[in-house]
Image (cartoon, rainbow, N blue to C red; front, side):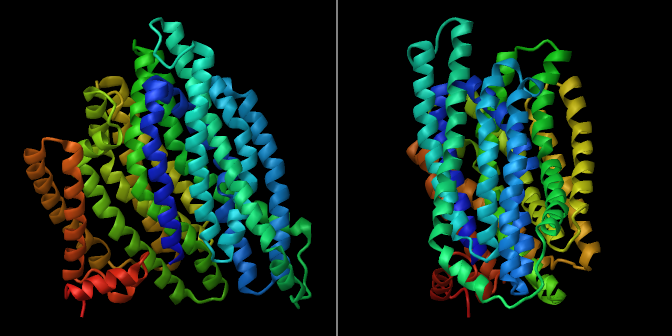
Length: 542
């Protein structure tokens, strides 16, 4: 249920982010989106190294203390974590600001510098989110994610417009190359400021919730009868020991995005004669459209991973391995039941979905984004499972396994991407292929590591076979419904709605007919009791 709360919030925030990409691209253009995406990738890497993994790491160590009812030590860990992110975040922000020229093209340098202060703020936000997640409450994180995205959207659009008008004179695209460059860079900078504004709004909300609960928190601390107090020195050492593997794992796991960005936007122009403006425009289509759409269903697996970590950590701390395995099995099954049909749906409806979400883009841009989305569809399932297994390995104490696995996957995908870029005319499509290769290798290696770590074998038929069969049949029906309505209404944007509705209904029916979900499992989904009531009314459940 906690995973469901976080998943719904994650999907809502990503849908908001996706819907705002179309008006943002209308303002800043494909090239501006390319500069923004290039800077955002390196901002993300520095953020991951300094702060991004903090919620998961802090959630794990505090949950272990709460499981032993050591409330005073749990709060000491929280205070030390705040001090830790203040120091690390300040260093990371300064490094990103002054080292921007080392990472991105000169046009994207000011955009990356705008991102720099956000790294510092995000660290404090991450500690507060991790603190509430350790208490098995995902509501604070969920609401803050939605508020963060809303503020991001509003500020990004307003500041992108303001900066472009102040630098160029109007929102119209200039005729000269220098004017177009100013237009793109100014718009990208405004959007980057929106990202920072979103993080600040989320921090203010979570800090306010903590302040409201301050009395209750300290009441539990006063009632703590444990005499052994962890010293701040020991706590900082423990935080470092836990956070460092989390950071390395997350950073290497996501490094493929920045590696592929560098290979395409900086490496390729050094070796082949290409139009650099077109390169950044194509990358804007890939990252701003195709990748953004494909990331929406992955939000569910990320939410399940965040929700399961404190539970697994507490069960293992109590020595209850069997219950931990049950939690893991349920998490994997829930993730596959959602991600497999999502991947099939994105593959079948790639073009109409892209047209629906980006209605003002030209035919050539939409076609490119749709083809990229089809190439990325399989990676939705692979990333969902590998992300979940990443967190499971961290929860069971195998902190180094995800690092080694991600490093191997990164080498393999780079070995695939480089020759595709150098010796073929695939161009931006090579990045989508490499991304899928990375997710596949990572998925296989993480799955093997989980099996070796705890002797766990996932049930296959109901977790993988049933959702896959139901999804393939759903995909056929969805395509047929879409094509049928398209002949009637002549509009892909209208025809996609009945296709999605019918496809979702067909999948729901097939999964229950094939006995892929039990009544108790169905109740575990958001609003699951309504799904159970519907299934019983349709006589799909006994």
